[in-house]
Amino acid sequence: MNLRSLAYSAACALVMLLIPVSSNNSPWSAPPQSAIRCTIPVQDAEFHRSLVKKYAEDKNLQVSIVLSQDNFILDSLRHGKLDLAVVNDPPDSALRGLLTSRSFADGSVWAVREDEVEALRHINQWITELTASARFNRMQKRYFSGKTVNLNSISRYDNILRANADSIGWDWRLLAAVTYHESRFRNDANSSRGAIGLMQILSGRYSEEMLLNPAVNISVGARYLEKMEKRFSPSAADPHEATCFALAAYNMGEGKLSQLLERARDEGKDDSRWDSVKNYLPEGHHTRSYVDNVLNTYAYYSKLYPR
Image (tube, rainbow, N blue to C red; front, side):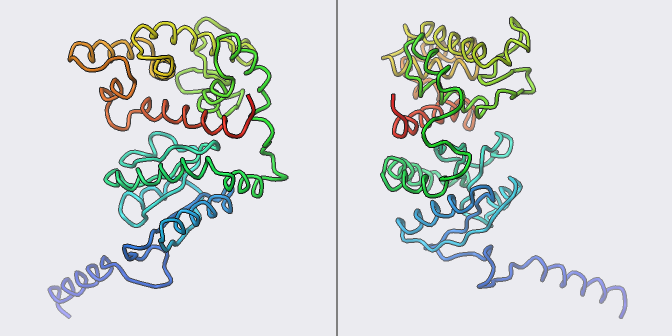
């Protein structure tokens, strides 16, 4: 065989390798429109599997599910080999080019491609309806009974959260939701920016030893939230909007939120509501999802735990 024939054969072989192979046994094969391909995390796999199957049943879809141990599988979602990925506590960097649902209280979210806006709307509506149902409470008890998840309390810091929430006039479950999204209730949590502890307090005015004391850390975080709520109340349409602004300021900083409000006023936009002001942030900005996720977790806690 001459060199030209050899090169032609090699090229043909390469093309054949690049052609997708359809297989009824492969979870990655292209599905009909009435099916979805999904991956779920190994951790609490049966719980997540039951949720996805319930979604498929309610939407009259066939579903194929694959277990995943890491977030690298999200590349398969971006490239169209998956339709849905359930991920636990994903970092922002892992979610570029994707849209995520409202979060469950364990930090898990459902991710779809960024062009699947309508699909995400249906998913969020379904999650909202499901988590408000008695069926969902039964599912949680069934899958987490006997495990380390305590269904009678939010965290070991409930008493501290209650006391500090009372002192600033907040529902303790809202303060718990903030703490969850800051540290997942890990007292030893540290960030690359030097934030420490349960509510991720920067250590400028406080020693690390002080901030590793849960009572001190939660107290400092609660007082800052109170300060931000009072700071932005004059701009807010109502107490709920003031809370949204406080959460945004906690996540992105007081100065940055002030700049957004000023820009909205300068352009004649509604600066009294977070849903209007947040439009000045880029799509996918972490503060957009932060405020929504805290409020969603708060709503979830409110259904499960007494005031």
